[in-house]
Image (tube, rainbow, N blue to C red; front, top):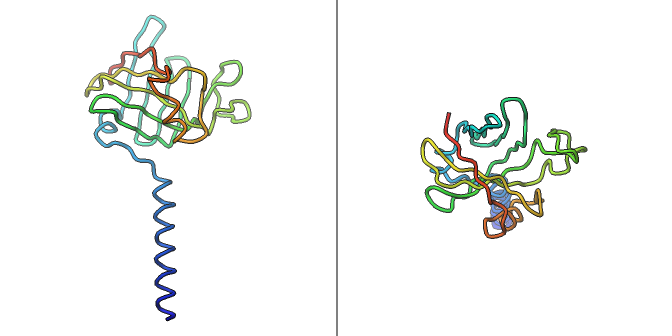
Length: 163
């Protein structure tokens, strides 16, 4: 009888551990991630802007400025060449549109944001940061529902080439 109680207790503990661990590890579509990882540049008359994507981080910056950045990267592919990159802000805009890592100045830090990608190849991609009524979401699930093309968040895409 004691062994049966212990077995049930161990099974319940293992089940809870699997649930907790699976909730902490964010899925990344491997084919999209492989193609997206790297540094992408958008050359314009205003100077170069860069998008650096790793397996776990996203960073946007320019030749002489820093913009938004994040970690806990989650890529949700819509098909082979398009989808959405979600991440938690680690650097975001303050009330004066200065970018900072200070959460007391930028309330979006620690919250979820999204960047849409389309027409992805090994050497080029179109990228668009979410822009609309919300600048961030508290949860990944909320961000997946809020930051969509259908909701009007992705209107202007930057043409980028891989460095």
